[in-house]
Length: 104
Image 1 (spheres, rainbow, N blue to C red):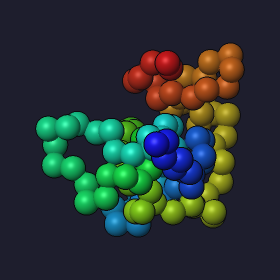
Image 2: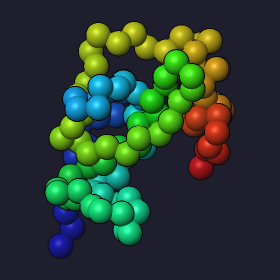
Image 3: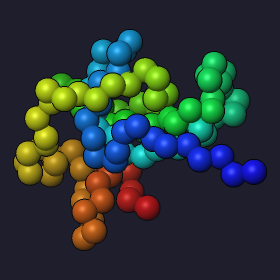
């Protein structure tokens, strides 16, 4: 049986984490938890999980968050071309990756 899971957030969308109080850009989505199997897993692994690139004052990091703790950040302005160039590598197809990670 094939299970269809629809992700609520799109690649490139700016989201806010309700509990951890950070904002970031959705870089990737897994239909269900695909984190480290040795780590303690989430309570609800069957929901979409997102890799979110969080841009802070001193640099960025990648967070792996469940859909249920994220919300769309409708008040956030899109990245400017200067910000995108500072934080991301962009390939010819418009795909973004943090400068510290390759585009695959």
